[in-house]
Length: 426
Image 1: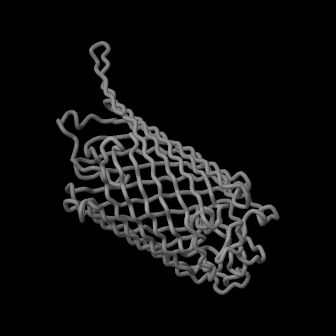
Image 2 (image 1 turned 135 degrees about the vertical axis):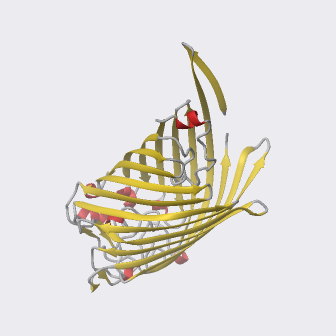
Image 3 (image 1 turned 135 degrees about the horizontal axis):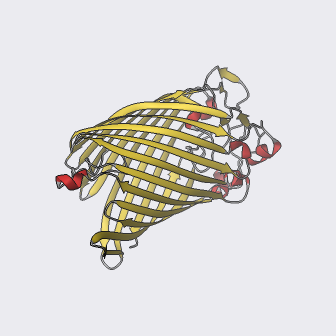
């Protein structure tokens, strides 16, 4: 649904453009190691995602309001079922009018994949203000421990230097509150700076850095209530409410949960990267270094994960330092209109904690060290069915994760295959 209208007052004209879009996505995933541990517990799950977006643009500003709701339903472990609701608002203001004076301030370079590295208007100055509220509501049961609320906001200033470089500075604040585990509730402040150089439409270099801190509001040690809510089983089998192999519940075992206290942690990151475009080909590479400034880290150790192997509870970036490498190649319309992308992510993580055996009771190294490698392949193809939907997108994604760790509980591999169908409703 699109509409455009013009209003005038005292000979001053302002043009407003509004657009409302919505989409629905269905994704079915097979995860060979759904909890991301040495136990290798597989599961299949269905995710349904609804997105609503309303964009309103004026001459020198625009406002984007969106809602995203996702429902995840697990086959073997239904207690992981959860709803996630997210509401976002982004307001962008054009502060300079250089492009108007020069006749055309657009370098015809479009942003890609939500990246802020390649500016659309190379000569303009923008201030962007954004805020979001998110809520996660798991299924009743043990995993209700993960019910949380997140409120976040950020301000981003984009300032160009001539036609070949842009500076971005940003500040963000994020508050997360866990309803049932107050010791995990935290407030994060982070500052970010990015300097991009784009000598042509096809080449972009960038350098960036950030400094952040996270304050936790609870410093309690392991309590009985936490033990009852978050579980790890020392024999490596997860004791969920669902069925295990052969339709029988996994064997029970003792509960061992560790909460190591550090009420305040800081971290600095710095790095850079390169983006290249050749027609419908796009390649990118980046290097990021994390530094634990305070020497503190807050984490929960050796417990089953919620929803996926990636979790801010169990693998918070503030709990480790090291370097991360990202490489990617994308080709649009490679074969019969199929878009293809291949990626490689590799992270070296040094944790501020010892490494244990798989039972998490015996120290086997003074410091835990992980090398996580993620190889991904994604295929997608868009269709248009007249009278049915404005657009359909079929997708197939494959990820192979190898997490090599001297902590036996976290030494694992994982294969994730996802088949998805996206529908643009209107």
